[in-house]
Amino acid sequence: MGLALPTETNRPLCQLAWYLGTRHGTLKDLLHKIKRAMNNGLRVSHDLAERSADDLSTDCQFASLAFQQGLLANFRYVRAPRRVLHVVCSRAPGALNFFPGSWLERYLEESPRRARPGIVEVQRSVQVSLPTGEDFELDIAAKDSSGKLLWVEAKTGEFTGSIPKSARVRRILDLPADRAILVLPEVSAAVCESLRTQYGLWTVNLDGWTELVGSLATACATQPRF
Image (tube, rainbow, N blue to C red; front, side):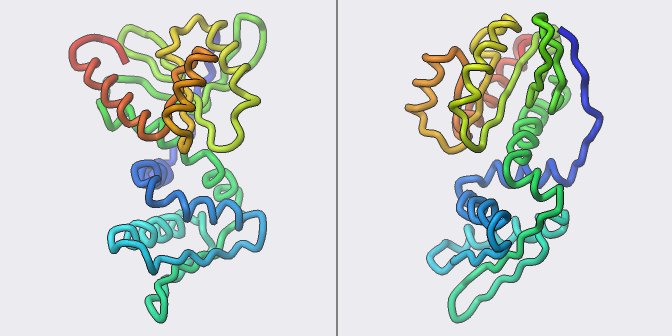
């Protein structure tokens, strides 16, 4: 199997993705509105009247950080008569890439680095030449100190059509199920378990991913495994 590793690294975008991934439960409503508005009207009015002070701060901070990176055209928080965050979306290439899905890939790339800095080699968007002669892209590829591969796929939209191909690639790569991970941010734990059983991919939502990275990082402290 041949690997072609990318060279692009944008630390501010990785940090923004980390902010979104670690606060996804709070930010997912705003994220969904931004994704819809990018294709229809570009403007979002996000009602924060019933949200806690912490949630309000998280939403506004995310809008500010995204604006600083050129991913939003503008934003404004109005306190009265009702607390509302107004966002003007951008159709810049970076925004069209980040909000629909690359944020998740960047977050998954960042997670093992922060869990155990220096323990693993992690790359995003890795081009692979399979033994069958096919070309395939691994969303995230990581290697432990013994050179064993960990493959992570990220899906933020419709995923049922792509899972059979991912399962086939896992078999071609001869990876154990627990080293071929599929992350579906908002899918229930029960559905993840069903998909795991059906396709042989270690399927988790974002809560499951957080637990998984923590357990793998702990294992690294005692043995050379991711």
